Length: 466
Image: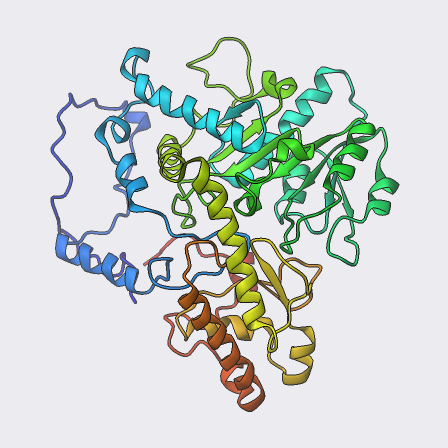
């Protein structure tokens, strides 16, 4: 498929933008471009065909099964999109006077109240634009708390190896030394390893519960107690909140602050670079350090993004919360857990789970022995799934499981879909023993086969040149 720039024809036009209805303002000469931007020139029909062709090459939740572990690729109800498209929301200006945005303010306040109830927190901000941005904001709360008390010796953040993958990077970006502790044999936090690193130099702990291998850590109250006794704070990564929302609250587990991915847990389209919303909640003693909009508050505050973040994502999340209600939210979590356990048991007998126990919302397959027997890797299995209409699971993560495939089916998948997926896995298992080369060269029907991912990561081509 050609790039849109390669389809460009000089002088070709289309009229899809409305005429300018405000006074034209000329920039000073020193601020103007010296040459026209390199934009593609196409007709409207060419433009439509280009993006339609792109759509055919993309696999989304609307196309088929999408069990991308730790990403909660659930179906997003259309009503959420319709609410966000209402003119009063979609057309609001961030600098509009207060009397003109009362409805928008009510959306933010209502969403904040509901999410505080679900998480056990006291305060909430919607400024962060994504999950990792929410992590960054949450750890900055911890940093500001310690700094305000003059406790500058706390320079370390503890990150278990079963935590979410972005946690170490977040702690480092906030200026902390990352202390990694291993998991116990059951995949949960090793309490003795935790005790060994706790001290007066520890600022806090970052943890996901359920963790990245899909297990709820039954020692969570002991974990948070130990950190608090050492003077540290506990940060909850909400990446896996979908498994427990409405059932157990992070605040009741002993966590002091949390981020939530509104763009996945609360049904806003996930992926593609945005928009997202990494809402951050906290206990009352951390609330003075929450980011506030510079327009809506006085004094000095932490500011991580302009105004109130991606407002329309919050609209979609609130629509989701109101649609499901108090009874529907925990039911969604229960169905997510049910689906994960059902699929895990249907697959078991061919590919083996890394931890043979009841899981939460996701589970990890360990293919190390399978690879030794067949020469077929986790990557080969993932690529082979593409040819069968299934998006690959998360590969080679978490790092504590070798040749890992992490699957999260979510609550919106039917039993029939899960049965079909289990059958595909069974077929691939058999194929690995009868024709492993077919899997090592997969995918055979995709637009792109096996790009050099290392080269792409280290030397990305980010700009088109003729």
